[in-house]
Length: 144
Image (tube, rainbow, N blue to C red):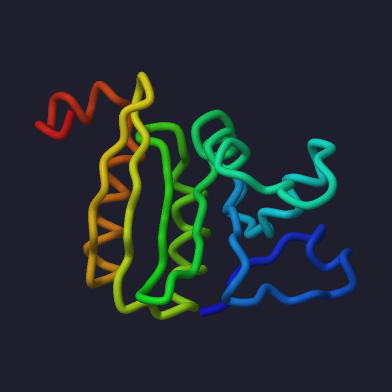
């Protein structure tokens, strides 16, 4: 499987995504380097990518953030804020990296967050599919 890279990434001189780079999956399932989002909103210079920018992309734009860790991949998403299209793009990206573990951070209303760990992509995919549902479906299913 291959990651669907955005046209903008190729416009950066065909630079390929390295495993060390943080990246975001947008609402169209495209994989973007986190630095690209920083450039889009006018941030320049050192420290242009920070936790606030990533949290904004995840919680306000419905993106999924993926970052390589020495022991697997870190994935951040906001419950019921991302689409299934975004999830599909993220699953392709995660599969390409073949992580031994997936560390999921789920943001919720009022700044709450939870942490979960998965040792299989299938387990992560099942949980993420539930989290993509509207919050009323989460509450009625016992996950809210």
